[in-house]
Image (cartoon, rainbow, N blue to C red; front, side, top):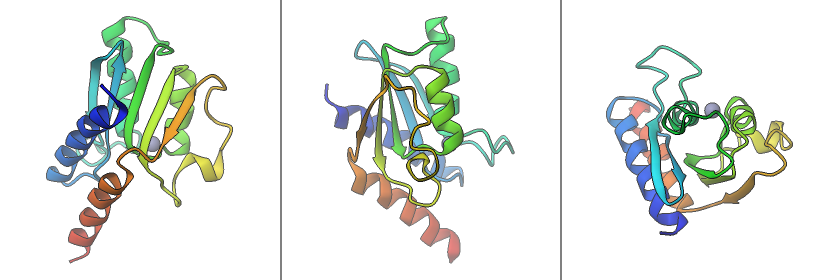
Length: 144
Ligand SMILES: [Zn+2]
């Protein structure tokens, strides 16, 4: 399985978020080629600004593994993580981070480019157009 396969799974999660009226961001955590967590943004549903897809996915993955460090895992997320999530990804010592679309307004790269754990391997731009299109469609529909 390659990165685009798992990113499609994250995109499916993002679509679920959109259906609930949530900003469409989805994430999956993969460990040894197995998806151990799936999550999407739930900030409206939970009325919790911290309920980003990545936060949910990290919590679920750690619970599944029974350990807080995810250094053998890859987090796939459709949109570049924010500063909060980048911090959580660092605390989890994530092995790899793969994201789709960049987020120039809220993404960590602009505000905290050093926020991740130094050992985390980062891959950007996987299915970026699909990831960005979901976000764009969501906000266009919302503005109507
Ligand atoms: Zn975030």
